[in-house]
Image (cartoon, rainbow, N blue to C red; front, top):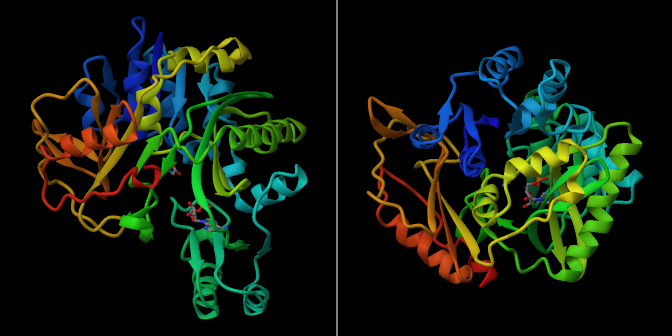
Length: 420
Ligand code: AMP
Ligand code: GLY
C-alpha cells in the first residue's frame, strides 16, 4: 500500500514512521523534513501541500492508495474535498467538517447547539461593542481570534487595559489578518488541560490513548504559548469516569452534530479539554492529530495506523480492535533559541550515533544541507521515549537529549512532571 503523508513537522515524521512499519507499505511525505529523509522506507517529495493540484499529481505519479493530512490549513481549505473529486482517498475532514477548527465562532455556536460543555462567551466584529463588553466583565478573560492563527490567536487578558489593547490589535490593526475580523471573549477556565484525540468516521468513534501537551515555552506553564513543548501519554488526569464523560458529552455529540449539519467527520478529531475535578469543558476542537501529542501516542500504538485509517474511510471503524503498549511515553521538544519569537536556522545538529530501541528522535524543523543535518524551524526535534511508567520514560528521553547538540538549543526540563 502506498501512503502519502502531508506536512513537515514532528507529527508528520511520527505518522510516516508508524505508517512505514507495515511490511506492505511504501511511504511518501511532502515536503517532509531531515528526519523523514533519513528514514529507510520513507521518501520525501518536493510538493507544496497547499497546491492541491500538485498534491493530486503526486498521488497519481506514485500510485498513492491513501493520503493522511497532517496540518489544519490544507484541511480547512478543502484538500480532502479536492482529492475526493479526483478519486483519491484522503484521511481527514472535508472543509465543511474542518470548520470546527477553522472558525472559533462556528465551533462555539456548534457547542451551544449540541450541548457540548464549554466556557461562556460573546462574539464581536465591532471594536466599540467588544470594548464596551470588555469594560463590563471580571478578569481574567480570554480573547480569541475567530480564524486560524497558528496557535497564536488566543490571548489571556488579566486586565481591562490588556483586553482593550488586544481587541485593538485584532479588530483595528488586523494583527491576525482576516482571522481576527471576528473575535470571541470567553470566560477564563481553571483546571488542568488534557488532549483527547479520537479517530472519527461518521458516528463511529475510536478513542486513542490519552495525552497531555505542554503549551508554554517556560517551565511550570509560564511564558508565551508555543505549538507545544512536549507531551506524554497516558494522561492520568483522564480517569475512567472522565473518559466516559468525554466520549458521551463531547465526542459523540460532536460526531452526531456534524452529521446533523450534513458534514460528517472523517479523520482525527482532537478535543482540547479543561478538567476541573469531575467537570469537563472543551477549550477547542482541532480537526487533526496534535503536535507533539502524536509522537508519544504513536510510540505506544501497536495496531497498524494504515489499517485504522482505511477502516475509518470504509465505515468499518468498529471492526478495529486497537492495541496499545502498556508502557508510557514522553516526548520532549527541543527548540531553536528565540522560539516562539524569531529564531536562527541553519545551525548544525549533532545526534547520538545510535538510538536505543525504546527511544525515537522525531524531527520537526530540520533539513539536510550538503549532507549535514541543520536546524530549519522553531521546534527542531521531539525526543520521545517509552518506559515502564512516565518517570522511567521521562528519564530515558532526557538521557538521550544529553547526546544532542546544536547552537542555543532549548528544551523544558519539566515535561511529564505534572503527572508524577
Ligand atoms: P485554544 O487554541 O483555544 O486551545 O487555546 C490555547 C490555550 O489557551 C489553551 O491550551 C489554554 O491553555 C488557553 N485557554 C484557551 N481558552 C481558555 C479558557 N477559556 N480558559 C483558560 N485558558 C484558556
Ligand atoms: N499540541 C497542540 C496542537 O497540536 O494544537
